[in-house]
Length: 155
Ligand SMILES: [Fe+2]
Image (cartoon, rainbow, N blue to C red):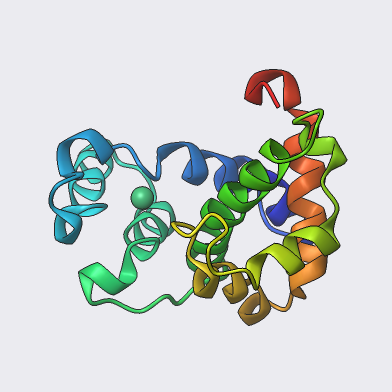
């Protein structure tokens, strides 16, 4: 999310925090997809967190909540959480299991293979194009950002 903010001239701190907080209510709502994000919104609102962050957190679950994605941040959180899954899944089939070994072109290719990492939402990944980042560039940016924290990811 920080890398996306930098790419789009937005605020890396705010976008990074949105990424960190976006699944805050996951444990509580994992069996109730229609509540996912709403609980987090309640918690963050009570703490005075700014609306843009709260809206984006709800927007990452827009389909289940019946709302639209409006801001760049709304779209970025949606496509970013999904591309990370594709990058991890691709790294894991490499001999060295390293994110740094993954190529953007491989991500694009793997996305077309329905059976590969089938839980990863391809439509959500492609939303990067709605904020004017071509898919392969988005994959490359994501790989590089993840490779920077490879020690934390263990990949
Ligand atoms: Fe989520």
